[in-house]
Length: 113
Length: 297
Image (cartoon, rainbow over all chains, first blue to last red):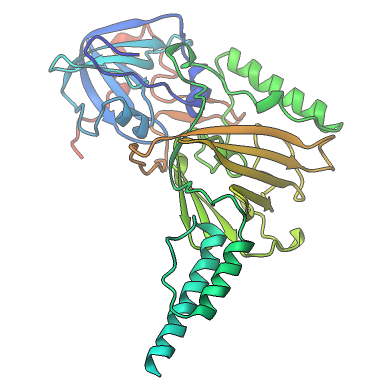
């Protein structure tokens, strides 16, 4: 699946499937004017904390090998970066979910999946 | 005099290389043999060799077909192959209940952790399901499988006798002995730990896993697996994993952080997101405890 920017999305094997259940896969929400508070490049899954108007959203990403295959690098994001994002929200209503896309300051859009 | 000794030495080395080559590797290039006596022995050895050549299965292999290929399959839950094993009772009912409980919790959005969630090795046969790429290395006397997922390693030993199962130390990957039957690699594994399960399928310490691994066409590998464990299985559990070569892929390390920054494990075995999990959505003004210190490290 190719995204508008040309980035290729890769799919996430079963290892994270346990946590897919926590997200609403039918809903896709947007975060505009978000600031990166934290970007963790780790296994079994990377994570991103975006802050919008003082509210933190914790977003699950993929394992680092899969992120790399999708075009991410360890230094793709850092605290303070201004980004836009879309995500599948947590079913329990808390702030956060599964990151679907992020648009970097340079305009490039990446997906962790 | 000196020349003859050297020639004999060269021949001896050539012969031992040839036998090791049969053990694990593809046929070596043509022998540089000195004396007719040695040539005759080599000819005899080649005649005794199977007609089919030992293939080169070294390289990087990915599961094929890919169960997660295509965007529609992002959220797919893997099911046990061939619908699962034919278990004896009471194991069959117990397993069915366990799977039903797991699926119910998944539907409810409160999924159960599994060993992979906790970054424990998949072990055998799960590792051969190649959730991520497998790197296979053929070297004299051994075929090594390096799985990217959790940086798992299994060693398939050649020219070794399988010990009696009661002497095998239970391990995640078991003790594996391999041999070539023509161009098929046949591997026998015993001694997988009883708490290392494939899709939660119970097994005893007598479980035997047999694999028949061969190249089906250039770039494609097949692993026909048979699991035998008469005390729990009504019949052997048979399924096949397929792989496609992808030598362009650069394998990475995959080891987990000591503490998962994202998920926490509840006492009941379910997992949930950490930060914000107990903070209600409406509470925007008092979320100070959510903010991470902006330190650079």
